Amino acid sequence: MTEKRNWKEGVAAGSLAGIFWGWVVIAVNYATGVFAFEFTPVQNLFVASVAGGLFGALSGLFLSTIGNKLPFKSIVVKAVVISTSIWLTLRITGFALSSIDHARYHPVTAQNIQGLFLSVLLGCILGIFWRRHSWE
Amino acid sequence: MEQVKKIKSLTNIITPALVIVAITFAIVIIAFGIDSIAPGAHDTFHDFRHAIGMPCH
Image 1: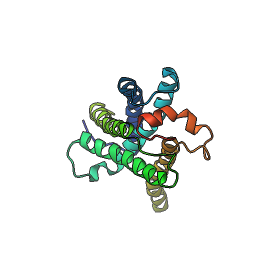
Image 2 (image 1 turned 90 degrees about the horizontal axis):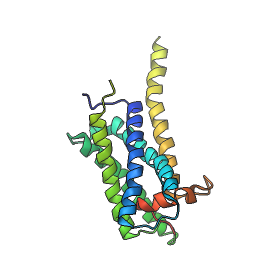
Image 3 (image 1 turned 60 degrees about the vertical axis):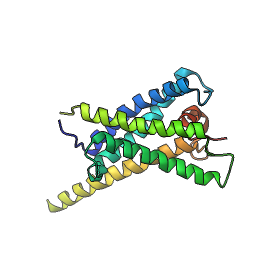
Image 4 (image 1 turned 45 degrees about the horizontal axis):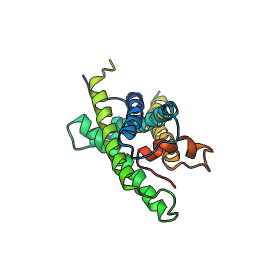
């Protein structure tokens, strides 16, 4: 079973993994209670599918294009590095923007820790899905 | 024939690059809730954004 995918397969695999990850995000937050949701579970699941699919697609795309250049053997480790890097980039940018407008994008420790954990989880889900699913 | 090959190889590089840019743009709008670009993006993805550690107000 090959672990090398072209970019279209990367987007497809990433999107599917991301949709599942979106649902996991909602479930984890309900379990931890870090943020009190304002919308209904059904609404959040739908939104998380869309957003998670996009995050997953980008991770899958990077994994298929630059994954073979990363100095790791395991596809799961590569996926974790990529997904976490995307999250860290967004978080650091948000931190920089909050210096301009403190009310927006400010870091909230509990939510940030949960977010970091969830980004690692996305990489794990993507890597496992990537390895297990045969595209032939 | 050579020209067709060149155009095909260029398309193979440009297309995934454009897809990366498009998806990244969408993710930035979702992660930062940029209403000025996509009205309603802030409220629609509000709960998801907080859950993944990108809080707003």
